[in-house]
Structure formats: C-alpha cells, structure tokens
Length: 105
Image (tube, rainbow, N blue to C red):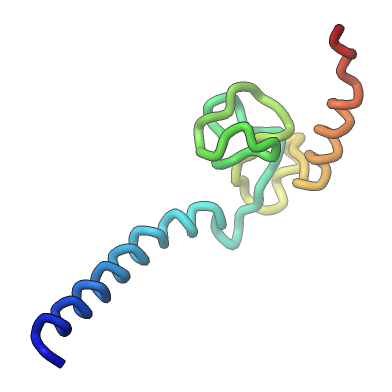
C-alpha cells in the first residue's frame, strides 16, 4: 500500500470515528436513563424534552402549548402522580380531541 492510499484510508477512518462520536450524544438524548420514563401531557410550552407525537416539531424546547402530545422525562413511577399519560394514552386523547373539534365552515 503506497503512502497516499494509506493516508486516505486513515483520514476516512478518522472521519468515521469523529462522526460516530458526534452522533452518540444525540442518540443517547432520546433514550433517557434507566430510571426515567416519557410522561406525556406534563411538558409546559417551551419546556418539552424532544419531538412531540403530532410531528409539528422535532426538538426540545419547541412546544408551543401545553398538550398531550408534549412530553418530559420523569422518574419512573411518578408520571401518573403528576397527571401524565403513557404514549398510548396520549395518542388516544389526541385522537379523541380531534374528533371533538367543531367542523370548520
């Protein structure tokens, strides 16, 4: 293997490692810790932890209002005490709320 090929190979490997290191925190951010769970309906506007269920935004802190689609990580076992919902419950609430909306003329 000549020097140019070796240099290109090392540069590619280094670039891959840098990309992997940069992506790791982002992947870890959505997982929370082992002693946390996602609690829907408790996040206040501007204080959500990540993307919402409706897909209207994809980042933390972008919630425009308090609703069942927004969530925060909370200590496991505390969500119900806070009045929060599981993902399935939040989806059902959103679907129910959508059915209740008055028809637009």
